Image 1 (cartoon, rainbow, N blue to C red):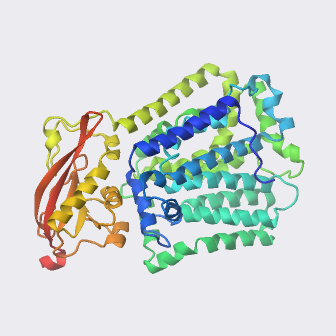
Image 2: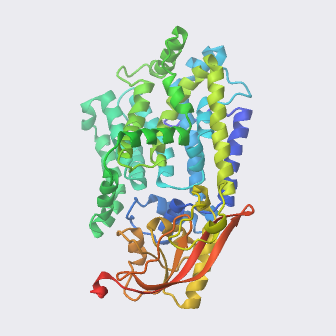
Image 3: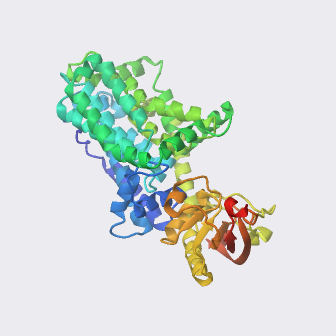
Length: 535
């Protein structure tokens, strides 16, 4: 079978897994949408063949989830399902790496016995990763790639470790997985390259003569035709944007790539990296155990002498994405969660190293595990509390463009208050007969557009993005309610090629856990003057 049933969880494993799912549900209920989540929720309310910045699958899934209720919690059903599937498939792949139960390392070494109160290494890596915890309830396109990359690895592992050539139904399934990856995110091209590499490395160029290989390619290409159709209709703007985004806007600097690597280490937790590093031990017993682990599957099947080792197979899927984004980070054009699929691809391999590490370096592993668990707990507290900062003195009543010395950066405040601020902006728009709402930057638009829907939200500093396609750019003589957020404030957009006037209507403080963490300024801006009209 391609997808073997995961061995039954031990009692403690069941409890921790259920606790993690409950934590995700609790966070999903307690906090409002982040900027990216709201952006992809808007995909569902503006259903299309594709979108300016990403392929359409994330929007299509959200549309299905939101048919029952257009509330924040329903926006978070898809990522929770994706996380559960990802954990299941990742552990299934880890167990395939171990080989058949009769040759399992866990049964051959008493140090690694799984008793009723022992938690498997692969599950530990999932449960204690801070960023993977966030991706368990906050939907971004990378969430969809997590189960897909594990599923593709299980499939191609089977295709390269079985007797004879891959079957037609395996090729069909591979084509579907590749198509779903392509509909999820453009970086899926790296996964397609990885799958091609492991298959060609094992079966050779004769694979290209297989009818099933071309069936898989045709299926994958057919599935991504909506992306091609949309881009053809929109002057290939999505591809142009992605190439520009990947190239970055700053000169490449080594320190930025190093800083990005450090951020990854903290965001995902150092446990996986340490497990990969410490896999290569000079200890003779450890080396013998590694050899048994990595060859058990091939020997057990007794077939393909050219089949890849566990290490080469895993790195084939994980390394390209890791290297690409570390390099792109040198130009300031990479975010931590973009690397999540590669991290997940390496979890089964790291779990093998962690098995030995737990037995032979217990103090070191417990220390790093404790640090990682504390990071997860601290992240949850910061999210729920809206950070520890507060607006004091002049910062509590600052006007647009003002940054008093007492103001402090608090990124966690970004999760609080946008729902009530957007509703109030709608009321002010109705009272003042404004045609739409407006924000200065596109990063501020998604929450306002989600919570104030269906009222249009326009971006003043527009650079031709998704919001222009949805709501159009600013038009001559537009009157809007402009929303300015104190933690990302801008000067009033009053100039010869902007509004004629902007008058403050009111301020709204955001009080959370007994303290003011931010505030919104609402201004009535009249008579937009474009470059054309100003001439």
